[in-house]
Length: 171
Image (tube, rainbow, N blue to C red; front, side, top):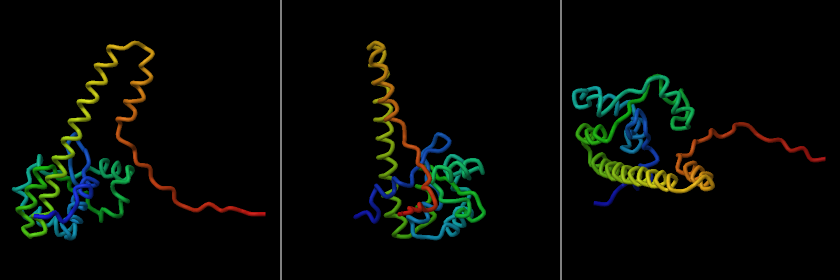
C-alpha cells in the first residue's frame, strides 16, 4: 500500500508537550482531509475511547506558548476553542473513529512517523550521554568544544517572521 502523505510532512506536525509526543487536532484534521470541527465532534461522540493518556485539551498557557513558537499561526486560528492534543495511542484510536480509506492510509503514515521520531530521540539521548562521558575524561580546554556541541544538539527556536516593509530612499 503506497502512502498518501510522506513521513516528512507528518513529522512537521509532531510536537513535544507535557513530556509527550503529540499531534494537534487541527494538524490531524488537515492530514485526514476533514474539517477540525468534524474531527472534534467525532472525538466528543466517542469520548470513552480517548482517556487522558490518549488525548488532552491544551491549557490557555500552552496554546499561547504554541502561538509564540509559530506552531499555531495565531489565537484567532483556534476558532475560540483550545486544541486537543493526541498522543501516539490517541492517533491510533482516531483510525477507529474516522473509518475511511484515507484515514486508514494516513494513519499508517502517522504511525511510521512516530516510530521514526522515537528512534531519532533515542539516538539523540545516546549521543548526549556519550558526550557527557567524553567531557568527564578530558580537561578544561575541551569544555568549550563540548559546550558548542551541546548548543548544536538543542532544538532550534522558531522565530516569528517580521511583519512590515523596508523603505529604501535613493538620492
